Image 1: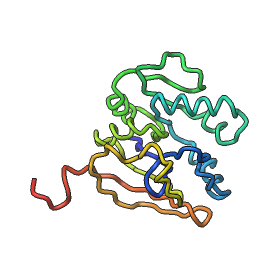
Image 2: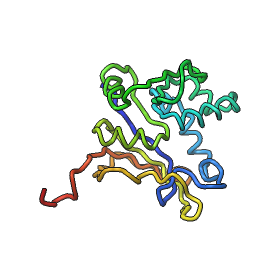
Image 3: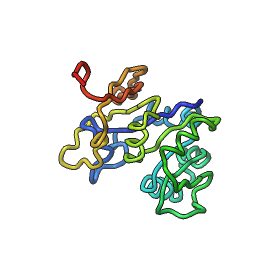
Image 4: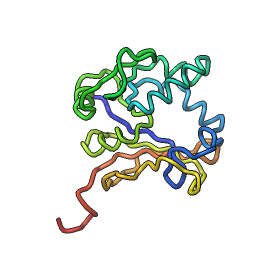
Length: 192
């Protein structure tokens, strides 16, 4: 059965983006970009919601020769949405308009490839709550965007214990942290 990884890039204070800041907060370096565009990072099926699909497919359409998007264009992608209509314009993309949790349960049984989310905060929360997430990975960028940050990653999440299984530093400043998550019913040691 393939693993499902939730995969985010975040500011130190837990935001997915910040108003007026460039992608990667302008802090991506050659080591990180090399890792992002390497082969093993593109051997999965990408899962996303409608908002992420609109954003990423737009980037891909405007930058078809960008090496990062060439690999992403080739990936099999599944979009969960009740607002989009098939056929979707982004190559290798399947639309699922039913229950995302049930569809991902089925994918975990039948997919020949690992599964990984792209953005899609609401989708990731639902999959984590349902106990479907096998790995939780964040790349932390060394910036605090308290005044301009938007899309707080962890708001609305259940309580989750995280067991660190991998860590790495890119370009002397970006931290990759990969965990096995366990959704908790309450604080550890609390009477239930």
